[in-house]
Structures are given as structure tokens and as C-alpha cells.
Image (tube, rainbow, N blue to C red; front, top):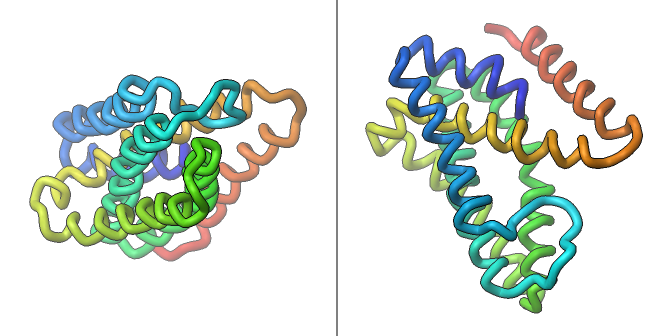
Length: 194
């Protein structure tokens, strides 16, 4: 997520949109912070250390729906630049879709929801991603600023959510996985044409 945001999404967005794109990158970053940590202050990754209520589950779902919608925007915007960028963005996003689905399902289950409702919440995240892909082609603001918006969201998720999670845990396994992931992204970037 950090690699795709810093190496491809943000530079392409600024190349296309200049300083306005930089503003939209910041807007994307702030929107995720607002929805995942200001409006839903109990939503966090990792082990829950407090009682999880249905309200917490629903507020987390609302924040993640915006995030996953922007994931779809990122995929569509990446393909609008080039098939290579689209493929790289698609796989970067795909890698965090499974943990995202598990996280929201677990949160719903911890809040006392049944299995069907937990699966429905995860399915809603997948549907929001698909809607992001579809609406990017239909709405001019998303088509024009989608790459920058996705760059800000991706940077937030990678640098403000995921990196602090593994920094708080002891050992070398997670940092090695992080650096390996960045290396694999760089390698894939070099191997794909364009």
C-alpha cells in the first residue's frame, strides 16, 4: 500500500493535476482519518481491549465502506493511466481485501451479530469496491481526481494504519514482511511492461 501510493498513485496524480491533485491527496488522507478515527474513535486494528457494541461495528462498517469505495476508484483510475498501473493497484488492493473482510466480520461477531450479518458486512465491502470501479467511469469528479483521492487514502491506510500496527509488535517477522512487500512491489513494477 505504501509503495503503490508513493511510487505510482501520487506521482501520476500530481503529474496530471498539479497542485490541485496534491490538495485532493490530502483530502483523501483526511477523509479516512475522519471516518475511521474521528467519527468512529473506537475503530482500530489489532486486538480489541474493550467491549464491542453493535454501534461500533456499524460505525466501522461505514468508515470501511468509504475506504473500499475509494479502493474501487483507485483500481479504475490506475487502469485509466495504464494497464500496468491498473494491475499493480489491483493486486495491492487485493492483498488487503481478505484481512479487511475478516476484520469487519470479526467485529460484527464480537458485537453479537450472527454469522449471516458478519458475512453480509464483508460482502458490503466487496460491493462498495465494485461500485467505486463503476462510478469512476460515470462521475467526472472521480474520473478527474480519483487517482489523487486514492493516493491519499492508500497512503493513510499503509502509513497510518498498517505500519503503526506492526511497529507496536516485537520481533523481526512483521518488519521483514513489510520490507519484503515493498521489494516485491518494486520487482513487479519492473517486470510488468510499461
